[in-house]
Amino acid sequence: MQKKMKRYNKNEIMQLNYTDFISLIKEENRPSGGKKTIREIAINSFINENSNVLEIGCTNGFSSIEINKITNCNVIGIDINRNSIKNANEKIKSNGLDESKIRFEYGDAEDLSTFEDNTFDLIICGNAISFINNKDKAFNEIIRVLKPNGFISIVPIWYKEKPNINIIKKVNQELGFEIHCYYKEDWMNYEDKKLELYYKKDYSFIYCSKRQIESYVNKMIDSKNHLKIYNEDEINLIKTRWGKTINIFNENLSLTNYSVILLRKNLVPEEPEIFLTKGC
Ligand SMILES: C[S@@+](CC[C@H](N)C(=O)[O-])C[C@H]1O[C@@H](n2cnc3c(N)ncnc32)[C@H](O)[C@@H]1O
Image (cartoon, rainbow, N blue to C red; front, side, top):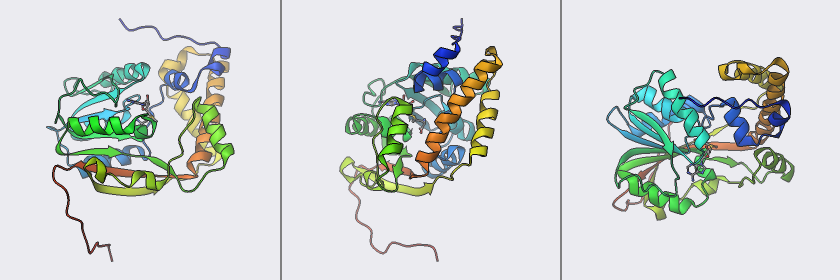
């Protein structure tokens, strides 16, 4: 039987930490670029209905669900947050997906021992890569479970230049932990990991106006049927809190770019390339 959702009072709503608040509103937590990014990953990794895909740091399942919808590939999404896994699993049926082709389970990028060597054609790690503590350990595990010539896709967000300490303080306070400031060069070199940089495209974020944010927050919260148990006052409080978070993220993201990156598991060293080309 499904467990009844906890109903928070106004005080508790204000006190919830970021992760629990996200769980309350069941925000999808898309990778940067959303569906456009998933399409770019699917097309450039050539996956199809026979492919096995693992998503690491799947949060509420957005990327896994979207890639299954557009390719009918087999997908497993893992995350260290059990609430997120529960939310993601609830979305399989409601999206009309084939339960034999998609599932979500607890799992840590640093220990993929439940998966055998050479299992996956594609591993998606989105911006979750920025939140993994021991990246070397995670990369070793990722390379182990990837098939030869399989792809790992990451979508890291990075600062264009050193940000002002005040915005970092605001983001840290909002999230309840300290973010690491990454720069473009942090996501350039994978040769030591025996990964070939196969595809890379950089994007910037479009700054949102206050009015756009207000309209998004209203529509987003009003679209959540599970929040209908809250009265008008409480809904307004949830909207105010979400609006504050989005305004801080908007300010922070305007200082950043992101990259869609595909790396290929290489068994033999690549010969270096000379005479690179560009469109003319
Ligand atoms: C910013 S969210 C990722 C959002 C979105 N899925 C994406 O790909 O951009 C980071 C997610 O990574 C998860 N995470 C952090 N460390 C992890 C680890 N070691 N293994 C698996 N998931 C992890 C967090 O619980 C969180 O759900």
